[in-house]
Length: 85
Image (cartoon, rainbow, N blue to C red; front, side, top):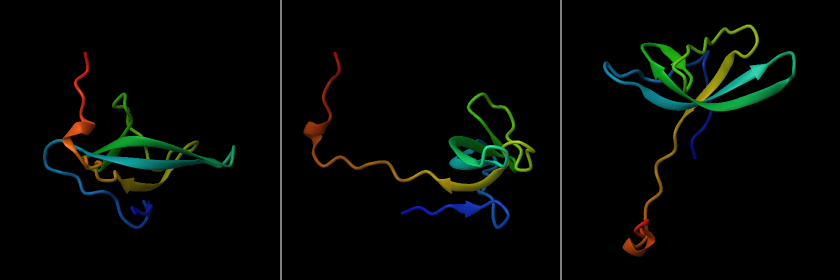
């Protein structure tokens, strides 16, 4: 199983072109809750689905952890794929 990685310890690898999709955890000190979402990691920075930067040091929702996406599921039989009409 994939484990959470602290941003203070290591950031995702960033390809020369394109981006890496990861899951991030942002923590609200005020609300004392985590928010989990997907993010793109590109050129050393996280971006949300609207391609807005998500700063690690955001004063309200700093990203504290990240993890890579799990592997896609494998199909057991070709009958699992059905044509959608």
